[in-house]
Image 1 (cartoon, rainbow, N blue to C red):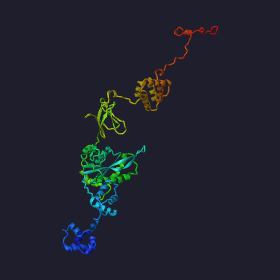
Image 2 (tube, one colour):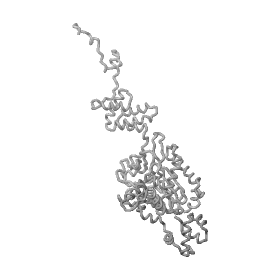
Image 3 (cartoon, one colour):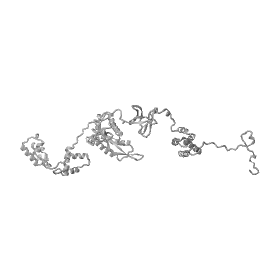
Image 4 (tube, one colour):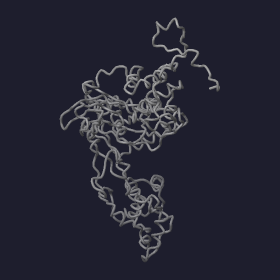
Length: 529
């Protein structure tokens, strides 16, 4: 359609037909039509002419034709496509054609053209103006990186946390073993430390680690308590993006896309065995993104952050945030509470009592009601470790020396019996390294002697009598054979001497207790008896 306002303006300027055709890109017929209106209405200026006047003077013939067609509900088509990603224009056109409204129906190509024109004027996107130091957008990257255990060869997937300051585009990225709450909170702490300050607001998505529903089926979501504690510690606000509104966090989506291409894409062929090794490689890639890549305005992310945004961040608090969790734990008979497979001592007088335990990433604090009892450094690594404070140990358990030593085992064996002591000593003496026999001694004293010390002592006595090799299996078989006191072996008694005494008369006076038979005792009678 010709631009009649432009043609009218050129004619009022005194331009020729040829100049108007070349400038406005219209036909001579359109110019003649406008010239006729200028002459008939005696127009001298275009200022007072409205669009309604132009539409009345130069009616569009196509509009009269379009009135014969049924107009599609394009707003409903847009809504359907947003709600259902499988909804297509072809499906929308078929539904439009199948309607029972009287009138002509557009073909598929014209339907698509109308839809495109509608989007051009209705599906508009506002330009977000980001202020320096105001917001930090965070999200988990969709793709993962494999970690291979160097010993077992087991493959696990590491997920990547991404944070970005939208004003400067400064990015932070770090890998974690999972997307649980401790990793989520630690990632924020690391991000704040990376930027050297705290923005006014943090804009996350709506994962369960950041928000939750107050009631099942209710669309309202609130910030989790632990996430809110982090915000309170750093004096910032948590403003989650609207559900299914990716444009609310377009900068985070763009940062995730950059990480997928320039971090995960670059490191995909490398082999990593630990998170530390992977994060070192990620740091190199992120540094290149922030410091080396120049954007359309010929600046890097770091240059804009350092010169225009850094000073707008709030300072970091004196102490870093530590995630706090509370548990109610019962002190065992060994006056220790067990938290996350590690054991921490409490005063022995509280054994068997239910206590409150506060756990942070570095400390474990035990409370009796509101009274703090003690504090331990949090144990990590191997399961089942003990943290025992000396003042918590009862008097009878103090000053125990020689634990897991030769004396410790022989002292325990002495409470069973002398034969057991002999067997324990034989086991320890029979090892090239004495400590190699400790486990066998432990198995014998705890495994065999725990339920019946008398039978263990009897089995050890039998083993000594036989001069057999002392082992756990041998003693176990001997104990199984001893099912009554009658079968218990008697202690070894030295045999009588076989040395022949001298039967001389000379010694009779000096040895009155010796009786020697004479030869008549052995004489035979006449019958040979």
